[in-house]
Length: 335
Image 1: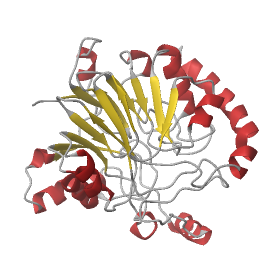
Image 2: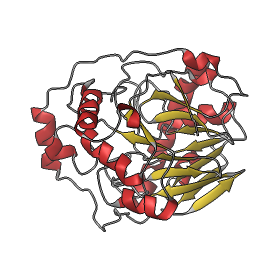
Image 3: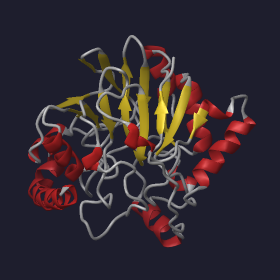
Image 4: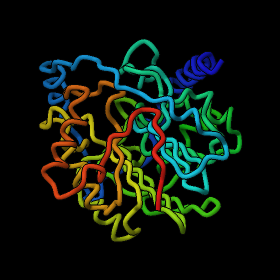
């Protein structure tokens, strides 16, 4: 039933996209990164990369069904569902980050990056969600059919999105949407959500580049702090996040979509830079994301995990300082 609903939601979204494309292209400010720069690769660089690339072979990561032990009374855990989608419970709220349950990260169902594996938890089997967080509007992070389905099953859920993206969700009939600029905060029960900078860009078409903001989400309670970095290149933003908000207990940091470096470096960290982010924010433990789900770039599917382990061995950190959780496994939060 959920699969059928996702298909209906995608058709509805395509119509909304076509109707809203013109207004999205001519309205709104353009955002830049915290250093005042924007990521604008020349079109010829894109053609050069696409012409030269040899896509890696699909490879399905192992998975666990440990998540089946969870229920609506379960607390203090993280489950990697795939890509940048994490199911989190911080002891106060149940939170879903950058949810994408569609088969493709694309505005259409017949083209674009396709999943190598189904989501670790089917959408229909999720617990009740209190808050949905979106880091930016790229299709692999903001999937309208998934958001519509989540609202249907969680009518009281609050959707927190970057500045400039509320109109996109509202046009799809999603209510309880709030948008935020960097460093703006919102308290829900005992959790303070703060939208934080990342070094990236936004676009859903050819003419709407950087019309909405991008970033990460810091989730703070008196007992525990969590940080989801979104999608990012390396910058001084992460030291600033620690300076302003403190070191999180747990950080969720991207490690994939980094090759070739000449094209991807500005907007996507590699595993060594991801480790540097973990050090910069001062996280007690970091969990990997943004790898092993879609083939977006040129590195072999399993390479991010291997390179992260190499970077850890070369550092002074223990192997569990930054881990790559198994899909569907339950990672408990501890004091």
